[in-house]
Image (tube, rainbow, N blue to C red):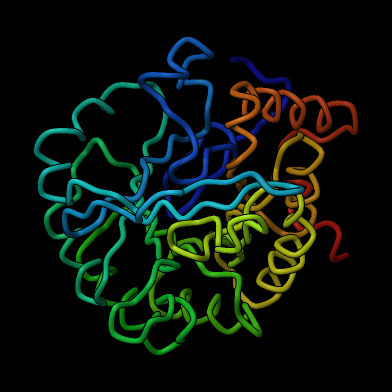
Length: 305
């Protein structure tokens, strides 16, 4: 894919060819979508969260459509980081674009342990810490408690030289607090944000639809809320922000850039339109060219001025 403008993004010395990647767990690279477009068209591919331990995930029903998006309670099923590095990671070698690995854990030390096992494998170009999954000790997402967040990121930072992204939970009073805590602990970028907590009830069966009772809301309906959090976070940190929430068109991505994001993740839209990410990349390039910009960096955060 060729561009009319410079779409590249530099995070901690690693250059991504364009600012678009899938959100964790939202794009099937090797099976269902293998013939849609070359993976090399993307700025990066995101490997679905690999947990420190082997785990089956949540009981069904795991996914349900709702007005304006979807709810999911998949629960991070995983073979575990050791098995993944040994048997699965190699298939991402030489795919023609950057590789970001999402990792998850149930305890603070699990993230550092994952990175120690990964050992800065050359196939991986950056790591995203999924700190929005449940913390066994407190019942809260790691990123909802600034002190737990800081300790987790600090430990992880000490185990890798790779660019480190921290994925934050949106269900918080002030995301500026956790964004700044991430930066101070050594994050190279923050992902704002994960899905919003929600649930759905079957009125005939009179029980929650999801097997886990609640799940994460994604889709177009959450974009205005996540947009505001990107806006807020951009006033609190000097590191790049990766926006994730409700992107289904290139116009959505442009809004996020203007709000202060440097990269954008596409999630639930991939399930309804497997070509969405390519269309978004093309739309961004056309917008920049038609408005006289030579590159993406020229518009990041402009809405604040």
